[in-house]
Image (cartoon, rainbow, N blue to C red; front, top):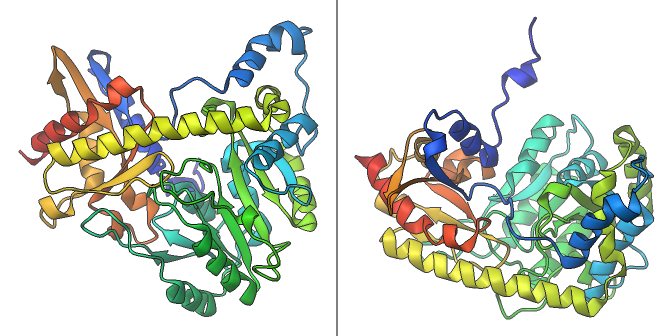
Length: 425
């Protein structure tokens, strides 16, 4: 029997590929693997969520019955996402909340809602952009267009070229533009002023403004919170009713495995039709909603306190690791950590034209190993080629996710330097 052409052409996502290759190693039981390829956070959840999880089998589902929830999600889980926004100072009365199986399902719903499957109208990305958006666009046969953000030798990205963005909109007529203010994969921060200028372009050309805000509150600059929900009709007339945000329990709340996300919008029709589309999925994970729903009743003070603690934790690690990677691999470019939990390493200045970060990462996963203190280690990372529309743009780059325990992450720079030396020789 033949499988579909679509399946024949499928390869694993770049954020999972290294782990899949590593799992095939015959010597994997003797190696300590440090997986910084995927944003799989290894810290405990928010305390009220942990308490709710422990109480699930005793209090909330003591009878052992786990039913489907309503398709939009439980009232409590929907309220939890809005309570977080409210704690951050945003007005939520005109925002509609649909709970999904992780932010990933919200991404797919968004693409279906603003473009539609096999669409002639593309979606506009700011490359590099999170690879799952590209993978879902491929799945749905939705074309994509990108405005490239080059990395400078000092580790900072060039400023967004708003003229280029508008020119691409005029030329390609996209249904919407995706921004990630606290950016995955770059770790860059998009200020509110930049978002406001993009919003004006969006209104001018009558398209959707989509914002992935999974890492909202994880900013290490002195600027205020940046979000599409800060926008209003006074500053950007006509913005209301064309905003969509992708939300997640995975990152700030340390709950990757719950698989709970949300599609938020201020457009009632989009919300109602998204629910209709999602009825085919029945609902998001019931147990995940039960646990995440604990945030619906948390005080704004406690929510902000937790966010600040998370912010301080990641800021310290990111800054220290950037310095250490630059120390152990002189000449490499490490992007400036401004937000989220990632930075990019670019080998362009210390390799020849034949170097491929993807091949190097595959080497690390399949056979690379380093001895430290009598133990063997290897490192799993994500090649940046999968985050660009034009893969060649990311050929010498890789993404590092700050998700392992601090003691493991501290070993990463020296392990990477030794693996790199092995690979070259």
